[in-house]
Length: 157
Image (cartoon, rainbow, N blue to C red; front, side, top):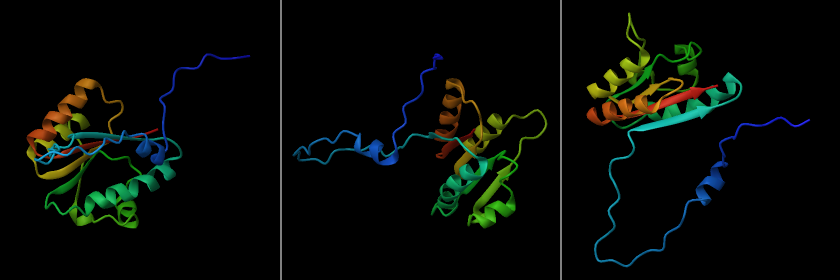
């Protein structure tokens, strides 16, 4: 018996994705080609599998961000309960450069993330919003650009 399957997103492993990028021939020009100096302000990572394995994959990313040369904070907005101070220490993160913020009252994690991005006191604001609508993505992007920051959303599931 066959069951209809919903279309799945195609995922390439890291090396296939790298090799799948088109290689453009070098053009001989008198002026060097200009590359945009403003990267996308919003990025999203999606992890699937056992939470412990997902955390092990997330640790080096957060560690790298906590060691940024930028003097501003790495801000975590409403991280999962399992990302404790003990986990941060054991993962080797620079806890002196990390702010952990929780929404208060009627404030949502989305509002808090936008506020943190807009203020510009953080080089990267990491959120755990799921799902992120197109409108929310645009809000986070605008707020990140206003604060010259990066918005990184992590989806665990």
